[in-house]
Length: 424
Image 1: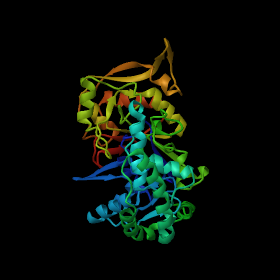
Image 2 (image 1 turned 30 degrees about the vertical axis):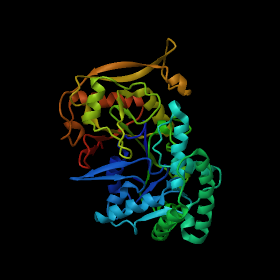
Image 3 (image 1 turned 90 degrees about the horizontal axis):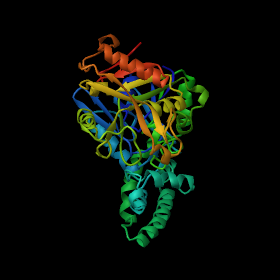
């Protein structure tokens, strides 16, 4: 398997956590390389369900090492709680998890600022999760943020935390919103910091050492390509780079060492929060997708907007990420549809176009051009191989592969770990 990057090709919620979990059977190290606890990866193992926000999904496999890379913004309180919950369920976490000393920390004042920004935007709101992710990345760029290395120097960390929190409190007081109780907040942080400190290290060294030793490494991304701060439907995006290139800057491995890129896409399309979504359905088909697919955000619980597969947007995403292995998830959600549509082009100002407009205002004006195919009207949930899928289902998947110009590799037909198979 070598060194592999896994990314979402749509607007997030593609089922990356499940695919990562399956791939981890052959992996020695899983590295989370961007985002924060504003995203959640859901994995079902037997009758148990796990929702992971910061800790890589590889933690569910005994013997797999995990690392939170420097490109991630980490809320210490949230990370500690996630560790406690996993250990209560029998998983050894502390000895298998490493936290990059360069990872930026998220505090309560970032969360308050996140909500303040969103409230000021009014009707132009982005739909943030209010987990403080954007303000934490802003502090990073403004060079005033605190890194995980601060956890190794509590005296210095306390001084820098109180200084920065006091600065934010002035803003909050002027805006008439809640302020941070510095003493209470630091008390909680200090207890957690002492428990997280042993996990902090320069993960660049450990990641490259394992790569040099020929170990298999999987780089895990959060969200999806169209939420990338550079390439997504800006400004309705997240605050980090969600594309394959970010695995190198956020994970600490050189581009020349990456062997494969796995792109994950649902058999249809969903989006959470604000922003244009051209194949969104407001009819019974959309309601059926949401109901059958249980389309609610793993982090926020917000209902996801559902629509037909957008091959234009997803092909662009596959191209940009250099996808050489395609994973299609939630195929079973389409089992009962008599007719299935795929958006193969857009219409903009009377012209048919085959590429995603860069300007979000233009994208918001396009109309989807659909092609229809008959559904397979047979259950796929018990399929364990390509040959066991209905003929029309295989034809649909082969069509998507041609449209995306990416070879099929993994198919998922249900939420459980065992409802996934490889084509080879």
